[in-house]
Length: 506
Image 1: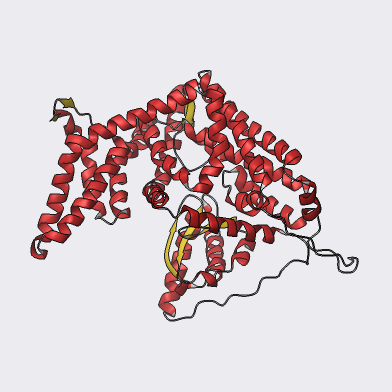
Image 2: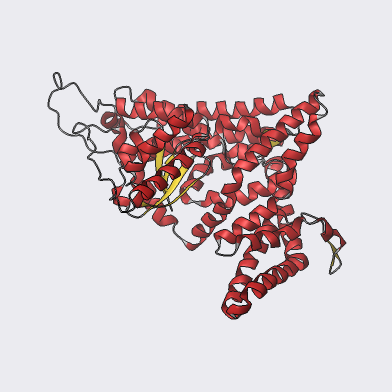
């Protein structure tokens, strides 16, 4: 039954994105189905948003359909299968024709109007984000995003193992769970090297082979100019640097090595040169950088406490808008590799709590606008689970002020969690990706599980309440309320003619 539901969702999406011939690539991340399109104009955005399974759409380097955690991993294979079946049955079939989408009554501002404004803002932000530095950050993010499912699975198993160990239950199972949860992390450098080479145009397996040097136990026997090496030194940063070097060496070899010798010489030189530079330079430098990141993150929250949490929680949504949040992904991964968890993610997750509180306030401030309220009702469950795109691009960002007050809520929640870090109750997430309520199974720290969960829950509650209060009292001007708090679809038998209202600027 579940498979039928997922296939039905995929079948409903396919014609609305222009049919199989309009799709050039398909992938997914934690929450989104990501597709590349031949002709963007064939996509029916409003019809897509109206599908019950679709939580929102986001346009970035790919067209992204937000389906939510869990659902996206099930719908994507069905979507891929439908595309392949359609192409096999009718390779030259024309793309689906767009159908008109009904508009609201004149003068009323609806959820569709806000969604269109949000899409325009997203498109404008995308253009501003297309700088070489931000495009590089996006490529770095593409290296780590495919690793998130394994990080989540191993993180939850590690938490279960810790719980069983503390309770003294099933002692025979504990070593097995420890091996399962730690196995991936012990080799994560290899996966990072593989994905780096793939992303930057090299041979993936060569990137993985060079990165494998970092985790090889035998490096402890190597004297690197008097510096003692340790297996794993440099971690994911070292793997990233080693694989990038391997890509450059490989491309150089492809240009200069005769074609007849390429199959033998190119991989040999790539692994040899990159491996030697990694052993006698990159491992040490990356190890120092990784240690500095860990030291700085712990110092920031130990000494900065509430203020650091306020800044991090309050600025995370703007960082997402600027595309700079992608720089945090390798930092999170480095902290998880070093300490077993990243102390930054629970604080950054407070931004989503502020967003949820702001959306609830919008809901109560606009009792007559059934269209916007319906959007909020449908998007709130995903928002509680940490999927904030539908609320951001469908509600708060187009409205303007509620986006700012959502940041205020995130800052308050971040300050709450940061304060407890300063008081000695340090904790973090054993994986990246989830936030909101979905982060609870991944929390770990120095204190007991009960205290850790209580502090995180308290931070969420503070974010909800402050985000709600700030939006309720300061999120609207009188003119905004006059324009927005109207019924977008009045009863034609009782409605009277009224002059059209001006649109609200974002």
